[in-house]
Image 1 (tube, rainbow, N blue to C red):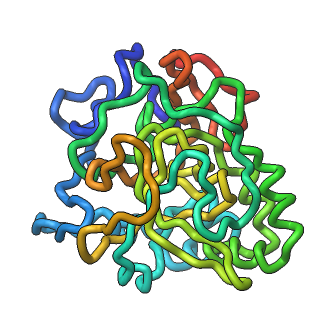
Image 2: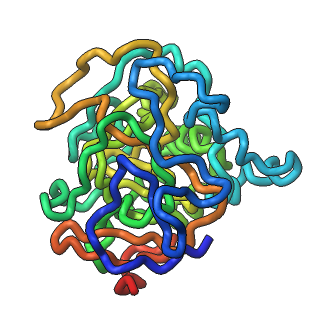
Length: 304
């Protein structure tokens, strides 16, 4: 969808409250959209609310069977909502923190991220008080340097194309055909995280894709799809899928960054319609700008 031009920048979005769009009464959410926050914290059961938890809610966005079948090809990767991570991943109990430039276990490729730092204090949003899910179209959800891509998409394509087994594993994880990988990667948008973000990450070992639950540090360079969902972590070329519920409180696994708290993170909720323009925040200036979906900085423009 074409996002509504943002209002004057009064600071980054507040994850502790619902995002308010121009013209809407305060304290209300857009019709047809769930509240921005969610009562679930990592490792805790969801309180009954009469609806499925956010990590299982993607089924409501499924398209008719005929369209969905075609969507499993390239168009599915680019324009249709992700249909969920494999159920087997739900048995995992660990939660791995992934610092800014750490490629993580079993990276798919070499790093294709441009070296950046975490968001500056004046450009960083308040940390959520619990695990929250936020829509991928939310203005200011992501950051980036204006006119500069945080990831090198063409280098990622070259890395994957050099190894047929990696290409096949990458394509299988993302639910597309091997031959569609280059076009699919070129349609993704490079951005930077502004929140510590839950995700299912996938590594490559012994010719196959692995998976693990992780939290990516704010400032991490990722590629997002047309629904605002992270699909690739650029530090290691790892494909990404939505997180799954953990069965118990996550144990400490690996080094983290100062202030890391697994129960004060977000997860990104896919939008039902495509995002045509992402409103990003430049961490060096704190100013908002617009990046059209699928572009790498050359078409960036000032937010109205």
